[in-house]
Amino acid sequence: MNPQLTGIEELTGTYPFDIRQSIKALRLNRFFWQMREHEARERWLNERSSAYDAAGLTGEERALVDNTDWLGLVRYGVSFFVLEKFARVVKISNLGMYASMRGETLEAFLRTRNVPGAA
Amino acid sequence: MARIIGGIGTSHVPTIGAAYDNEKQNDPAWAPLFKGYEPVAEWLAEKQPDVMVMFYNDHANSFFFDCYPTFALGVSPNHEFADEGAGKRPLPGIAGHPELAIHIGEQMISDEFDLTIFQERPLDHGCNSPLSLMLPHAGGWPLALVPMEVNVLQYPLPTANRCYRLGQSLRRAVESYPEDLKVVVVGTGGLSHQVHGERSGFNNTDWDTEFLDLIVRDPQRLAAMKHVDYVRLGGAENVETIMWLAMRGALAPNIRELHRNYYLATSTAMAVTLYEDEVPQ
Image 1: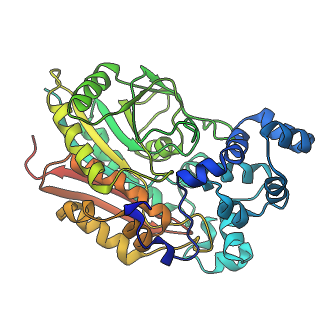
Image 2: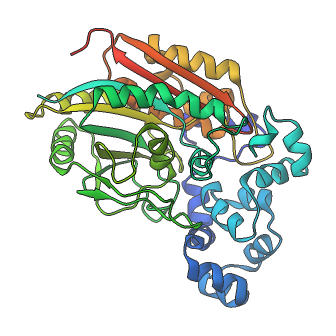
Image 3: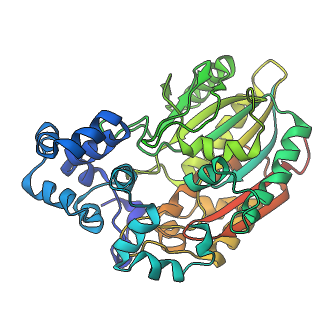
């Protein structure tokens, strides 16, 4: 256990991205990382199975992506910072992702914010 | 001799850059943020530093987890900005300062900070979000940038104390550079926010205020904290404020806070601060 993170499990709803997650989900993280590139975005939009095959994703991983299950993907071992690149492809804002992970609608989440107009 | 003339702490939220590009300076929801950068921009215009050393983190754009450096120093003559998937921001590239960067690398590695050296890796919003609010750039930037990347994405991260000492080592390196250069050091990130899990949207203004006080008068206390403390107090991604400690380490033990702005609109508490040594060099 990382001595800097002793007691982290008490903070529910928090999933530190560490080397264990990184090893487990390297292919999936790379798949999302590549969404920076136009060709990768087009391939997923137009030939989804072939994009998954090329990335070497498992059935479980494909289902998480198909369902845009943001919380499930984070729990599985995906770094938020590659996931947000995929969110742009499916036209979801970061605020929309936060709301989803909290189990709220975007509208309900924004009502809890100081300045919803900045969204 | 080169000298450090001041330090800046700033958030690097991508929405800052997007708001700038969408000209939201006078939008009531964004004006308090933009206004907060004006004193920093004025100070930079008045002091005219030659070089900005910026502690930033790459958000899995130019570095990926197949090889993710703990500390990495950018030594290129020119730095481009990254296309993070939504197209490049309309910003010119920025000059690097290879001679100073080489010197920093040689000195700091000799000082036992084993930096990775990188070239031609585009800089993402970790750098360009705050840059665009602090400096004029139509037709080119007024100073050179030496970027220092810090891993705050994939645990294990460098400790807060290691980042503080990294800044102290940077100061020794800068002060041993023979040419007269004015250097400003920037620490980026934070403040309170969490962008993953059910705890997304967590903020803690009380902690943010305490952090902004401690970074001035008791950085050792911040340096002694563990990552889990930052996560508990300020949300998971608040841990990136350890990069402010790197900036703080590059300043004198006693500093003056010239400016502070704090604005929490939706999900990330956005701060910008300006410091000078109490006894200028």
